[in-house]
Structures are given as C-alpha cells and as structure tokens.
Image (tube, rainbow, N blue to C red):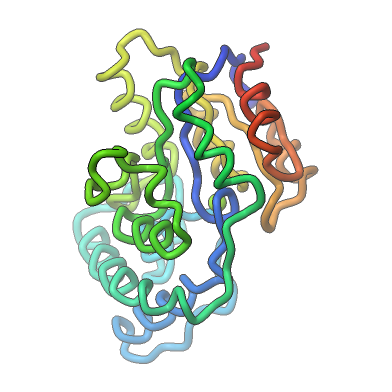
Length: 248
Ligand SMILES: [Mg+2]
C-alpha cells in the first residue's frame, strides 16, 4: 500500500520507543518478570516479535500468534493481567538499563507550541498509558505531552488498552482529534514512528507516516513500505518544522 497523499500537517502522532527515546530494553526485564510470575516459571521465549503493542506482546507470550485479530474475553483478561504485572515492574526496571532521549527530540517537542499550524501533538503508541508515563517521566519528556498549566494531568494521547491490531490505536486517535477538530482530514495527521508496524497501522486508516530509521530498522526496510518520507534520524527543529509543513 502506498502512502496516503499528505497535506500540511496539523496533528502529530508520536510513537515512543525508537522514535522519542530508547530504554536499553528495560521493558524486557519487566516482561520477563511478568511472564515468570504468570507462567509459573516457564523460560522466556528467546525471540520477541518487534513492533507489537504491549497487549499484543502479552497475548503472544500467552501463545496467541495472530496479530491481525482481536481475541475474545478470556485471552483479553489473561493479557490484561500480564500487562498489569509488566506495568508494575517497568518503573523499577528503567534505571537498570542505560537508555536515552534520541537526538533533536527535546528541541523539536519544545518548538511545537510556537508552530501556529500545529493543532496538537499526541502520543499514539502501543505502550499502555502507565507504561508510557513511566518511560516519558524517567527520561524527562512527559512535560511535552501534558497541559502547561497542569503537570499532573494524564499524558495526551491514545494508548494500548486491549489486544487488538495496532491500526485500531491510530483509528481511535484520529477519531478523538476529529471530535475536537471535525474538519481535520486523515492526511493532515502525521504518524512519526520507527517500525513497519507504525507504517502499516497508519496507512490502514489513511494517515501518512514520517518513518525514522533511528532504532532497529534500516531506512531500506522502512522505505519498502512506502511511507510518506523515511529519514535516517529526526532532523533539527527548524528542518522538522519545514518538513512537516510539506505536502504532496
Ligand atoms: Mg517504536
């Protein structure tokens, strides 16, 4: 599927891991612990699929291999229990690994309120809200996704809430911004993400993607899925602003 045509960007939907920051795989510590507790000590699977939502990871650990479907209530409940264990372990795990905020991220996020054409900038992520909050707070980025006058408000965004295809998360985000800006067209939103799943999920609902090869996927891998643009890393704040205004 080719990229949707793009208009000037009004709404930004940010992926977290590999796009804004990397945690040094601290999340894996929390997943291993959650799996050990829930499985009664089974060995953790050696290969974890990349780019799954937190609930999809839990479902996969429970033996549900199909990431294109929304499973029934029993598996949802088991996955929710494992996700809750993961969330409880994530905060303590973050300081155990050396992660970092990726280059230009802070300057870009700080510049967005001064860009008059941007309505809003949200997290649209396969993390759960508690997981996202723990990661962004640990790396000092949470302030960019809360109202300036309410530092304890929940993070702005749409998060993983159940086992479902990733495109459903982008779909909920688009529906939420259109309740506030009813005239917003899907091609005035822009997903910024680092994995093929980010691209496929956005394209499924007509949202263009700025793909960033700043983590585990090469720019060639990402370009193969025909995002609107693929870049090796986020550019500086001025170049970013110019780029997101571009249309085609
Ligand atoms: Mg990512």
